Length: 277
Ligand SMILES: Cc1cc2nc3c(=O)[nH]c(=O)nc-3n(C[C@H](O)[C@H](O)[C@H](O)COP(=O)(O)OP(=O)(O)OC[C@H]3O[C@@H](n4cnc5c(N)ncnc54)[C@H](O)[C@@H]3O)c2cc1C
Image (cartoon, rainbow, N blue to C red; front, side):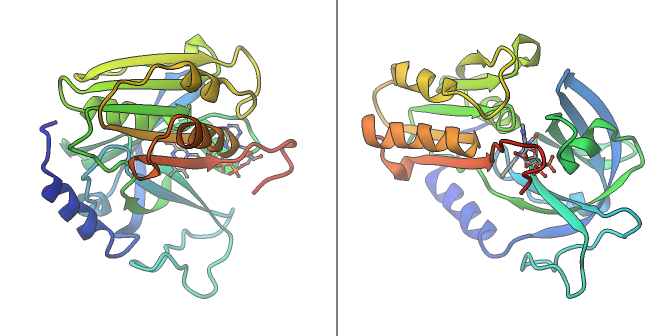
């Protein structure tokens, strides 16, 4: 990826902050693969994707699943409100791992990586049995990572739900850019090959069988890390409490300017599977 100027980035952010979601529609599953035992890569196609902008790595797409026996209801474009009477829609945010244009037979294909975290979440349950031909609603995308052309290095931190964004970002950072990533996963079998051209150092943190969203591995690893000097950019996402610890450590103990940091809770660990959002 060529380095863009500050003006080009500011223009993209301005253009994209006008309204959300930019695009709503129906997509169809065209490919289902396993990246690792607990990560399903699902490819979606649909004419709506031709209109989907893709300015930055790791953009956010919202998928919509209707209740059994119901049709997908799409939010009103540009407002993120469902029309009156729209009930029984489950929607969750996922990351655009890759958007490929001009795929023969499909046009634009959006790939998203779904963590298979058990059978107590509707999105994950769906992903575990996804099959070619199934249809979902989609709304989005939303910018997530915003490049900082002045940054001399990047720090990327997250659990497996953030891995699609971390991998997409590492694959787009330019040659010579120093990037340090800490990724917490279930175990070594969940590590992925990342096709980065930047100067990337990916540290995999294994939970060794402990449940996701427990423990302090991410903040402990960041605390022990030596960060390069010069202007950096920090991006972190994953279980909310784990990311809060990382954000507070960097801000309060390392003096990282919150302006240079994006740290987002993606999901919240619950004590019981019944205790759903
Ligand atoms: C901007 C953004 C981008 C995201 N990108 C991705 C992505 O690319 N890939 C991806 O897999 N996820 C991603 N997530 C996280 C995903 O949206 C959540 O994990 C979501 O809760 C899954 O929905 P669900 O219907 O399966 O479960 P929910 O109905 O939301 O939750 C059911 C139960 O499952 C638990 N749970 C939820 N997620 C996990 C998990 N990962 N591990 C263990 N327990 C869990 C909850 O604590 C709850 O008890 C993203 C989230 C955000 C906000």
